[in-house]
Image (tube, rainbow, N blue to C red; front, side):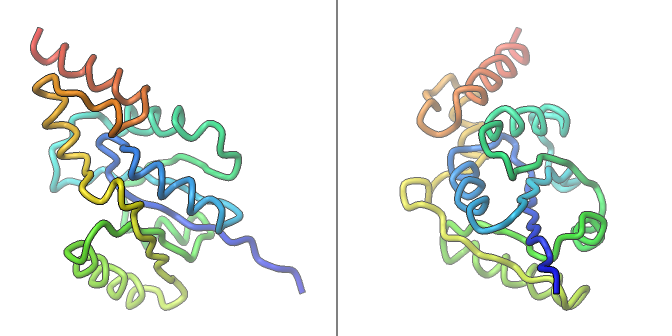
Length: 166
């Protein structure tokens, strides 16, 4: 009997990718044969970076992780997993407040496809306060974000906000 490859999807807006996201990506990549980091075009949010820019930044910061693939989608997550042959969703949890929403989403996804499991990972405590929204707010007012995001993202934030103000 041939063992099926364990393929997981880590979906998110990643607007922008933070060191907290990268920590989850690196750790999750150790648990699966293939980890697909899938950029979602969330219609409820007004993103700073385009899907293409977010995808490019993720490719840059994960280039040393051979089993990590970067992609994007605009469909139901369950449909995306099916198309990719994946049956695990990776989600990071920063606090109890995250768990309530994530539990609801995991239960909904399981209802839509009972072959799908959600793999919850606790965020490294040093990133428990960190969110893309906080990073954008700090960067918008020229605050120091070097210990919150990878260097490539810091440069992209600077360029984006300098362009918006110029």
